[in-house]
Length: 518
Image (tube, rainbow, N blue to C red):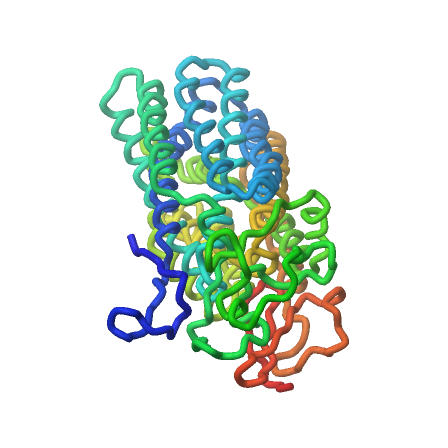
């Protein structure tokens, strides 16, 4: 793992050799969290890979019943996610809340050994998803807080790649366990529980808390700061530790210590730990106030809208089996195709989003998913269909799963980072809960083909609406109106203190440099 030295700005002289101190592209905290996610995903995906077949073939669940259970599986996580994010921000210990979530999920795995009917299985899955909901936003906030704004996409891409490595190994482990044991499902659940405990141990030993990290304060690599330069205020190219400004004064965290001296300003705000500002506890009023941010509202609305027509992984694999006649013994291996492509493309997609804009990459991902739906509908007899659909599914995740929280992180202050990520994730997960219910009902009434056609039509319409809502608020090169307070636009502005160039951000939070100057 890389060891990040955040105490010195880029371009500062090293005491040892007088050379520049270069911050790592990805912080050690990201690698630690990636390791936890890798181990936990091996455990989770062992269960997820066999669960659809276990419920439908083993317990005799109908598509409607499976849709309800799959919706519950995702919906419970959504309801708890917002609570987990706000609690992490409020107590200023993201690691504690994430640890509770990982621990609860690990505790539920061995309970599956005792459940052999729909009711107990549903309760256990709801508790397991409660753990996932608690940990998701604090974990993503830890990644964001340890990474400079211009490298957020890359950091989330690295984490998602490590996470997906676990998703790749989990189904393989489940496949071999089912092949080598008599009571295959019980063996899968038992091994999964042991692996989940290992993930919790790694979290406790190696992951720093949010208080240890503090909001990330990194100068932009394109505009290195130099000792003694006059700090005239951060720009979106050189993000402040508090993130973009929220126009409502109630959302700021004014320091009771008064103005800082020039020397203190060059080091950053005063804090219990030198070099790391430590915001106070977050109130519920501040969390609710996030909804006044136009860019966050746009992201949350579009994520929820697209979630309404995003078929869950389990349903997609069932549809693929139904349309192609894949044998049951190969079903646990289907997630490997998605995970393999996701693993290969997560980091490049995140870096591409940092470079060309998160909106473009995010919408392209949904276009790829739509192409997968089209292949399932129009070419069910194509020999290469499973490979093509799974590849497109993996590309969809690479272009969206890490890009969305990176975009959210660019729109909210550091002290409210977990709450903002949870707000968007909750809306998206609730929408996917509704999608699972609707798809299960449509499959039961109309069959798999018409149900998938309805989902594809809906995704096409929703993607068009999202593309319109997330468009840049002003043409390239047009300087924003200085009188605009930010309440009626989806773009933020700042000024490069070295060149005087106006720096603005798209609706997706990607920094952009306009042609106008002040």
